[in-house]
Amino acid sequence: MATEARDRIAARDRVEQRRRPAEVPSTVRDDSEDEMVVSFPEFVFKEFIAAVAMTAFLILVSVWLQAPLLGQANPGMTPNPSKAPWYFLGLQELLSRFPPLMAGVAFPTFVIVLMILVPFLDRNPSRRPSERKVAIILFALYTAIVVALVIIGTFFRGHEFVWDWGWVLGNPQTCGGSPC
Amino acid sequence: MTVIRAALDEMFAVIGQMVGSVFRHGLPLTDKIAARTALTNFFLHIHPVRVRRSWIRMSYTLCLGGLSFFLFIVLTVTGLFLMFYYVPSTSHAYQDMRDLQFVVTFGGVIRNMHRWAAHAMVITVWLHMARVFLTGSYKKPREFNWGVGTLLLLITLLLSFTGYLLPWDQLSIWAVTVGTNMAKYAPIAGPYTRYLLIGGRVVGDNALLRFYVLHVVGLPLAAFLLMVVHFWRVRKDGFSGGL
Amino acid sequence: MEDSREMSRRSFLAITGWVGFSVASAIALYQSLKFIYPNATYEDPPAFKADAPTVYAVGSTTVLIDKRVVINHDPNGFYAISLICTHLGCTPRYFDDVTSDLVNAGTSISKDPDTGQQATKANAALPGFKCPCHGSRYFRDAINFFGPAPRPMDRVHLEVAPDGKLLIDRSVIVDRAFRLKV
Ligand code: HEM
Ligand code: FES
Image (cartoon, each protein chain N blue to C red):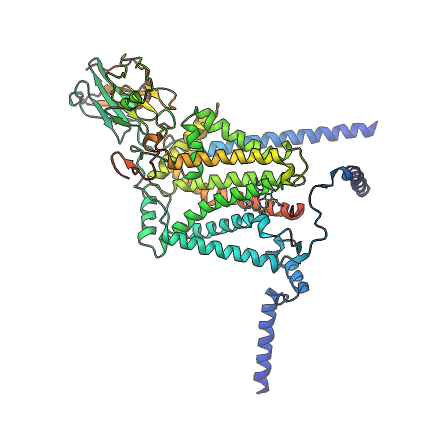
């Protein structure tokens, strides 16, 4: 048993040896000369500061900004307009334009699968931004589309979810004519 | 006199032993003490003992992964507080939210913190993903961790979605009605999936209870497990380091 | 020789074991799904009673918002609509005019296949339903004509109960030609 394991390790090492020279990511900056520091307390302290700052920020926001709470749920009365939380507004926008099977099922599944596959689709070994123009442009495009859809959903969709340039400044949400 | 002294000495020795059993290495005044502390402390062990300064530059990670994790902790704590007052049934839930807002001391602040931290977490997780993408940090050997990260992003969104139903107000019911109706369009399993998800034909008591269970136990547990794997992989694959 | 027979018996046992384990796991998974699939729900029963037919004037449209049902009384009889948007299930709202803004914006609107009515520049306003969620629109008879809704809203069964009131059963979907004559 023991020899078997040792053989397997040796075989794997041989394969690694053969593969290694081609693989050294020569394009990444050589950092072996960089200063070494202990992560505690140097790094931990940075994280501590970030955490405290975030907590202070959250408490301040929470004191000043009231989370929304409309009237009690009523299956017979849909608020007008009825909007998802902002991070789902892109999806809602797609749903208002495409058939649900496409916008609500096929499209999200496609994006998730594509995301998981990204490391395997991107064959370019370099990590330098200047050498990854295509990847960065594609990502920027994707981001721009997502952000644009969210902004449209938030600011330019009014009653019945129709286009409305003045939505933010304009009419409030109603439930059957009266405020929700 | 000497008896009292001896007793005091004994007491101090015991206290010293107690403190020493928790804080084993004293203040981290030198690198050596600090390193030993990090090596033996379970919570600090999440980091490598030594790192290169260039790996932990704030301008590289922007602390986004760490902040996402911290927000998860904030959400766990504030969520726990909310659970003391919240009953997941259509006859109580809405009134409980109003009580939290108007009756419970600091109830409103806790509710707001839970809500805004959830929004913030969606942002930080997304930005963290953007950072990882733009620095090409998903490349070999970190492909697997990128996949784990994708699942974490998904769970973060699902947590937000399930939490959205709980206040049982007009926003809740319609967001979930629309969201679960989307499942209906999936080929073959669609209608069953929706029935399973909301435990009925309309978004009502069963749906509220199901979403509650997923929101407070199921999804956080899954998220926590994935985070443990995620952090373990970050340590094993090493920080990707500066460009 | 003996060795190879030994191996094959071993691998046979291993394969049997793994197949057994997989089948058992699949059954357990299926049972778990069955467990969380409710056999009974305590929702509002689908059948309910509305008023007597005489309450609804000919040509009227009555929205029973608590039940999410619409009762239309046309010259040729009664029919009931399940007021659930066929897109993603929001509750559309009734308006006396759901077409004129589209007509004025130059969008051409198809003819109602059942009534033959059409919104034109001359006669722009037709009554109907608008959905607040993604903007689907329906004519008064529940036929969709705008937005992402894939089909008309369902028509549900109605009859006159022994006590003379209308009995509506939301679980029974009927043909579009269905009319109740009283
Ligand atoms: C709940 C959400 C998440 C948490 C709490 C989290 C946490 C972390 C932390 C603490 C790090 C260390 C470096 C840093 O802070 O930037 C990290 C690294 C990493 N994360 Fe995440 N993450 C999350 C979601 C994601 C997502 C959505 C992705 C991508 C799809 C992702 C991919 C990665 C990868 C590839 C690394 C290694 C990067 C490197 O070494 O530079 N993570 N994560
Ligand atoms: S639910 Fe009515 S338009 Fe989407």
